[in-house]
Length: 255
Image 1 (cartoon, rainbow, N blue to C red):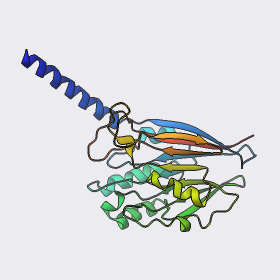
Image 2: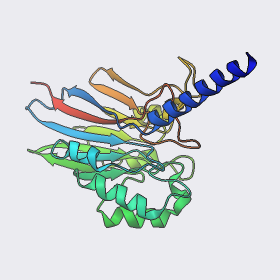
Image 3: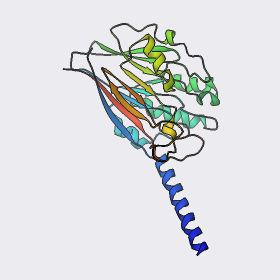
Image 4: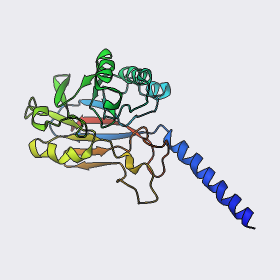
């Protein structure tokens, strides 16, 4: 009887482990729509947001499913970590850059492979490194400004410097690896979309309980905040209750 119980429990543990491993390597693309008042014309920017790739490889299947559907790619930090071959990171950036103009902010694990090594890869693929600065994209005389800050764990955050080129008329996407900086950004500006990762949704959750809150997309008046569960994992390649995810956000004018 005891042997039977132990066998059942062991089987349950193995099945749970395999299920958590399966969840860790899923590819889930969530779509969101944000309508803003500033654009009175029928204009839209399609932003693909992915964070916390860590050790994962970007699949060609994911890229092919997004070709022609993306205007701007935003990488929300932790693109890599210690032990990840630079060749894999280079291939991931090469894949993402196929989708369109690509922006990146540092995460707390990225510099573990050497900040210069990573910067060289990003610059080779014409990626905008938003280290306390912004970049503007135009379409039909309408513009979208992406503002990004440095990672607050290993780098220096200079919020005012990041927003220094922002104009009052700008439609703003604010990007930070850690969502703790959302409030700081809102104190000096009015971003329409705020993007972050870092928390992995707790990565392993039991019902409503987890180390960190689950990722979410929350719309507010003329704005939205997105905290992603992230694409990859850290420490262990397992997930439960916080599925792997990336996001396609369509920002449109009201008409």
